[in-house]
Length: 368
Image (cartoon, rainbow, N blue to C red; front, side, top):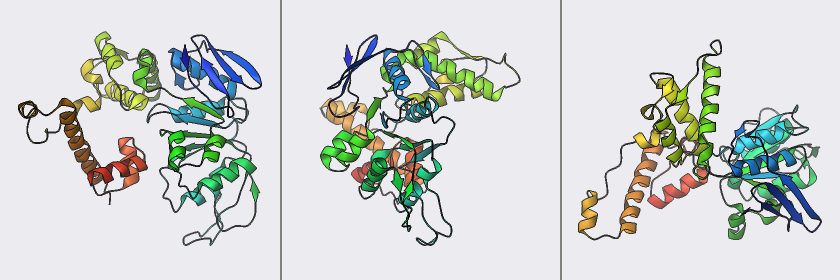
């Protein structure tokens, strides 16, 4: 059996087996059959891991439960939020997506909660924040782990009381929204480190959905590739339904064996690039080689690999030196390319602003 935990409330455990999902709490047990489908709205997968997730989403989407989605960058956290919204009673109301890592710290409060005219320099008009814009629908707070400690109590009050105050305003405004949050960080660890409020963590994680990285469900790669190619054909050749693409057998084997550090996002980009630049309807290994495999290797520090062996440097130490050199060079080139704009650099690299700043600090690379 595979066992994971989803917080419905403190003390509730979800046991996930090969065919069923069982919710256990002090109030009793509820069992859910694993989904027999290989997709849930835009989410695609036939692996047991994904059918576990589909079963949970089918059960919780029609409810009003707050959901926390965890997973590496590129695993499809926003797709989960959109699926929850589409499967809910709020599907005909707005879905507002807000990336907490992409908003300057001095603007995030007014972005989320709105502001009154004249409340700060540049506030020439009243602004309805994301929570008001999502009235009656769903708000998706991506990268919630990047929310500064000073704002966490304000978000907690919104979740508890379902009301907001605009910046510079005194009026209490009720809001009717469902909250789905996402993070690629371990919020439980952040709570232990004192960088994320425990009460907010429990309020957000009424249900936790953890998305596996693509390398842990490589049996889903062919299904995903077919879905991406069908979408590509429909978008680029809407008047020619016969315009179909396929993937050579050896190329598909290569795609399944590749670890995909950028997860589904990297796979989709790779497939669409191959379909755009390939010479024929059957895509080859050359067409589908991931960008990360085409990147020339950086020179090893202090010489070539033989030097490490001659100097009898332990493998682990030699590997770390190469990795440190790569990360430092990559960060410098990334920041230079994007004019030392942290937000754009982080988005291009598939990192959070916090992670990029920490890496830059570690290697002494100035981020502007």
